[in-house]
Length: 212
Ligand code: SF4
Image (spheres, protein in one colour):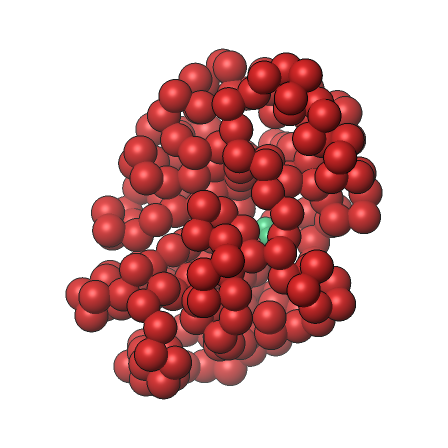
């Protein structure tokens, strides 16, 4: 059984798969409380689903790309079984994780999008840096930037762990906190080898719209 907050079909808003149609399985619960969280409704709300029931729902959309998200999906260990079963069925599976729990046991066919939490999230101490050793070249590391301090910290971590040479590194803004142009200018000034991204869904729909 897994506690599921929502299952919906939309456009992937982030990562190098941004713009592609995608089925999202949002699991309930999160062990973090980021200052900028936009999915607090997933902390507790949800219904119990058997893994087979989740897969039946996903099948309805006839869409190859599936993202497991939250909340923090890895709080529920059964999420590992769900991801494996979806891979076995031929789905391209992505996982969005906050980076505080180990990604070591995740099926290697899954593309992991892992946050490293920046200072303004107030969750800096929760980063589990060992995870960097478990990531594969196709995985992506995401930094959500809310201030110049966040940006400078991000730069130092990219350098310390040589991240740009190992993975796709994603930089995005805390929505409404800093202007996209500000972050883009910083990236260009420093010639950072990263991928800037916007949360597309927040520009297509009203930023607070759920299920998109
Ligand atoms: S990890 Fe994600 S879901 Fe959890 S508090 Fe942070 S932003 Fe919200």
